[in-house]
Image 1 (cartoon, rainbow, N blue to C red):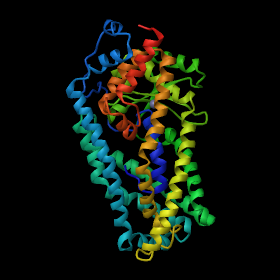
Image 2: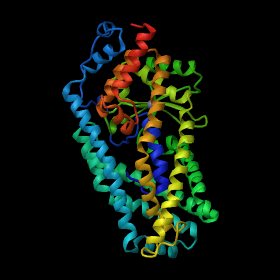
Image 3: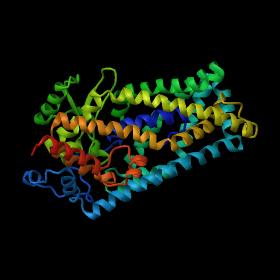
Image 4: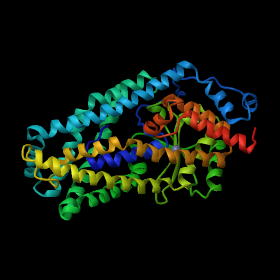
Amino acid sequence: MKLKSFCVTAIFTVAAFFASLASASEQPTGATTAPVTNAHFQVEPVSDEWRAGLPRDADAATKAYLDRLSPEIVSRANAYFEGGYWLHLWNFLLGLVITTILISGKRAARVRDWSQRVGRKPFLRDMLFGAFYSVAGFCLSLPLSIYQGYVREHDYGMATQTFIPWFVEQLVGLGVNTVGLAVAVAILYAVMRRVGAGWWVWGASVSGGLLVVVLLIGPVWIDPLFNTYKPVENGAIKSAVLAMAKADGVPVDNVYEFDASRQTTRISANVSGIFGSAAVRLNDNLLRRTTLPEIRAVMGHELGHYVLNHIYKMIAEFVLILLAAFLFAQWAMAKLLVRYGERFALKGVTDVASLPLLSAVFSVFMFFATPVTNTLIRVQEIEADRFGLNLAREPHGAAEAFLKLTEYRKPDPGPIEEIIFFDHPSTRFRVHDAMRWREAMGTP
Ligand SMILES: [Zn+2]
């Protein structure tokens, strides 16, 4: 789903960031009980003897792990991940085209006038406009969404849904987004109208507040619309994860699994929730496709996000980015409205009809800020990896799990490429961290 409003773009970009902290952003429908695997992605398993016989030297051990990725797997992973670079560009450009379509011919202005007649009150008018904007953005970006979210995922063997259940989920997402966008837009413009020239500071503040609300209600109200969550039955896995949580004072007394295999073959896990609503959640692909040492390594990483307060730090960092983005928007909107305002019947920056233009300006900023936002997230991921190694003490479990993540992430990029495009470290970086830990600590 592609959200086009500036505030929602911001909110959902961040929400996606947090989801991607755990690599869990897919959604579901339809039940699968058989183990789900990607036929195109089979790394040959090795024995404990193989691992114990690896060189002590971290570089050499890393090479031995990466050599287990066949040339076919590497070229597929590269093609999939590099295709994502282009999709990032196409989505950005499509957003600009959608804005042009919506404001030209005074379409946005006419929808605003209709919303005024139907809604009467400014708050209701802006809600109606926000809902329209959500639906219009969904429809206009649907061809790209189908290619990116359905066709391409099937081409690479990661999608597990047929089209109808997939599309039903997109509609559920559209419903959630439309309600959220209607409320967010109405609140934002109500505040912007009251505060005058300082609207950009208040806009960033309100967006930051809305982000916290999304993070609070997302795991409780939104996630269950797409997946079923239930306590993990496997006693060994449950007690291993709870023991690590207890060791670090993470206040959880249960571990949950969710049926991500409905939608995807990807493995993932997360520690979700803020303000004391923490929950440890593993997806069923992780439970089925990995061993206990791998699960302990992955969950050590996830608990690291919690113990290191990553979610609060990310909110703080993102509010600063929002402030910069809104400051840029204030400058750009002043110029654009002087030049095009009359032609498209936009009455100023507090006129909700200028929302598509504000969204476009915002997306320009966020597009060029991509290396910064990716790096902020990637640094937290590296911290969580190192925390997880110290907690789980499973360098081989970590390395095996990182090999499996190559399914959807280029394993060995160049250093600049990693800085610009990677929101998680590459396989090489992560395996090397694990092997360095192994070398320094002298474990088998
Ligand atoms: Zn993470």
